Amino acid sequence: MENLTKEHLGFEIGPIRPPSEADSLLLRVTRNCPWNKCKFCGLYKGKNFSIRPKEHVLKDIDLVKQCIDTFKEMIEVDLSERQTMIKQLRDNLGQNADYAYNSAINWYRTGMESVFLQDGNSMIIKPDDMIDILTYIRKQFPQVNRITSYGRGKNIARISDEDLKRMADAGLNRIHIGMETADNKVLELINKGVDKQTQIEAGQKVKRAGIELSEYFMPGIGGNEYSRQNALETADALNQINPDFIRIRTTVVTDNAPLKEDYVKGIFTRPNDEKMVEELLLMIENLEGITSTIKSDHIVNLITEVEGKLPRDKEKMISALRWFLSLDEEERIIFKVGRRTALMSLMADLYDPFKRTRVERIIETNNITKENVDGIVDEAMNRFI
Image 1 (cartoon, rainbow, N blue to C red):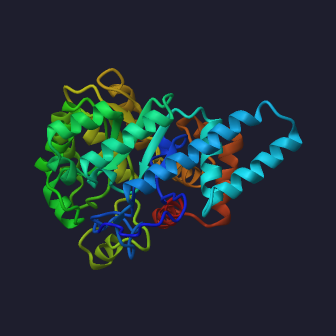
Image 2 (tube, rainbow, N blue to C red; image 1 turned 90 degrees about the horizontal axis):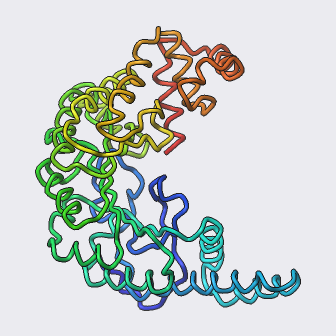
Image 3 (cartoon, rainbow, N blue to C red; image 1 turned 120 degrees about the horizontal axis):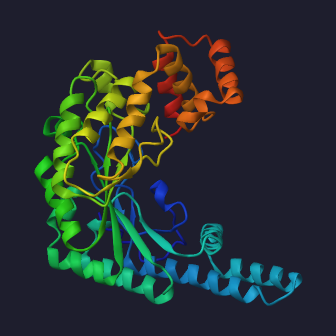
């Protein structure tokens, strides 16, 4: 639903961005998610979707530009004058001045190289509006080398090749699509609102436009019941797309996600880490003929070493997954608890005496056993979302 408010109510920031956009300037183009029915996601539940007027987005860009210009001028003056300039700047920023100021200064400190367009699916706006926003970003910040957005496969499949190419020419050079799975049964059960073929068509369209593509895969999203087909069907779709990046997002079922009700009802049974590692292994084993880079760039993923360029690093990633599965039960428990308490981040940490001792202490203090470890891991992972 379009936002009809004509007054600019200050700089806005949405609730989410990919980990790979940590250093990006966040520009809110839309609020929340236009679909908002995926059962695994509780982020936008109870919130209405709206498109911010293009003029409001352009105003946000101007506010950031005003901040950046002031920061550059401050280099040449003494401390007392800087403090005066900062106060005057904050007064001029209007509502949500802290949002604008903090966004600008963080971006300035990280080099001002990338911009991420929020929220859940900015690709839904009119192509001409997107092109105007992209063009204005490039005009105000010519040093920017990457502009990125989330996009929903079904919406992107509806955009003409010509319009996607126009967006690419205007400066949009990466799109993140949450494929999650390409199995039609699982897509239906999680209410993704898209089928496998549409996911493939959307990915291929992005690639044809010359825009970098990140596709997301969620091991465990089909529960134990659909684990094998989740892996195989997703690998088949990715083989047909050849995305630039395949990003792993291990399934976490939060308390506010509708999918939790399906676990209670027995539609799915929750897979543990071992099952999800097996599923990820099967998926990667079946990736053939593509040159994607696999990224394990989220804290919910168990094994961070599952990263690399295909086909060159395929065996290395497979070996990392097999390493975990080859551990005896006690060692797997130590690694799982270590990873979910953030005391371990690498495979080698399992053999670090200091880190290992700390994890063993936690296991002993909390009476963690093979019978209860999976439930404890689930609770810990919920805190990461």
